[in-house]
Amino acid sequence: MNLLHNRICKSAKWFEKVERHLLPWALDGVPLGGNLLEIGPGFGATTRVLARDAGAMTVVEVNPKLAARLRDKVPANVTVLEGDGAAMPLPDAGFESVVCFTMLHHVPSAARQDELFAEARRVLTPGGVFAGSDSLPTPRFRLLHIGDIMVPLDPATLPSRLERAGFTGIKVEARTDRLRFRATAG
Image (cartoon, rainbow, N blue to C red):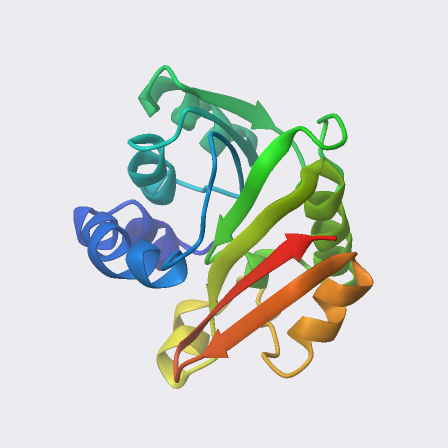
């Protein structure tokens, strides 16, 4: 992420937006269960909110510096692993839910995103839920990502991509600037 993007994602204003708006909207009606995995927590704004209600929570962060920072800041019920969401060092069917928020557009290609979806399915228990949200390209979003990896999701093709990864009960809802999704491990 570029410097401006980094500054925003670690700000108190972003944490407040995550806590009051993003997570309530993205997870409305989504049962997370007691064993939760978050892929790509970044600076951990979503992690800190989710950890309040999670029994056991694991996060997988690809950036070594962010993973180390998270280890120092998360509560005791959260385990931080450094790793790639498209090749996670986790056992099959170990989680009741997998979530990711505002990070999929940072995955360097649609093919790698599809690998991440397949990994999310692999680590879910049968009937487990995969849910999250991501930004959609607006002029402000594009400006914020100058010099960054930016591979936005297409809400029209996301359902078929999740289905190919082995999910059922897929729901995708798009607004002007973001989308949310949920799917069940078939």
